[in-house]
Amino acid sequence: EGSASNFTVTPKFPNVPPPEALKDAVVLRKEALANGVHPKKLRAFNTERIAPRCEVRACDEDVYLRGSDGRTLKQYIWMRYQDPVDCADLSMIHSTLAYVSDLHLVMTGMLPYPHIEFKLHTSLDHSAWYHEFRFDVNEWILYEQECVAHSANRSLIHGRIWSRSGRLLMSTSQEGLIYPASKPLEKQKEVNVQGEKLNSKI
Image (cartoon, rainbow, N blue to C red):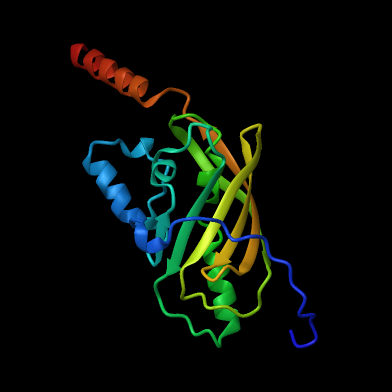
């Protein structure tokens, strides 16, 4: 760190709404379910279960919950780790940032698909590059994610993690394995109902 050059190059910080103007992802999901949306039609992961100590606020709530129908392959998500982290402990702040860097990338890899259900979506690998050595991981960070390619049920997603002050902290890359459901949810319900009727006659 001490012998490294002070010369830096950082891309322009995205123009997005602040986290205070957005709803928490857990609240968004619960509101959608309360309004009758089927859980399998929600693109957003259950953050309350997967990462309960990480607060998430999406800049485009509709894309976050339901996907983009292929209209956009990029999304911006504010994140904040809720347990205090000692910024003097470099290994802890680096580990915490690495932990949150794995969130929601596969979901972004699903953006090329229209509004359909999925039977499988999981990450195959994950790479991260630190651009800053010291930063405050307790603050809000902005995660810029983009699906840059998709073929053979695999999406390649690139990410950038920014501090709120506009410093590029990390770049990420992940390949996700994504399989759409063989039948739409409505068709699955129809088959199940027909099966129940058949069983009742036997």
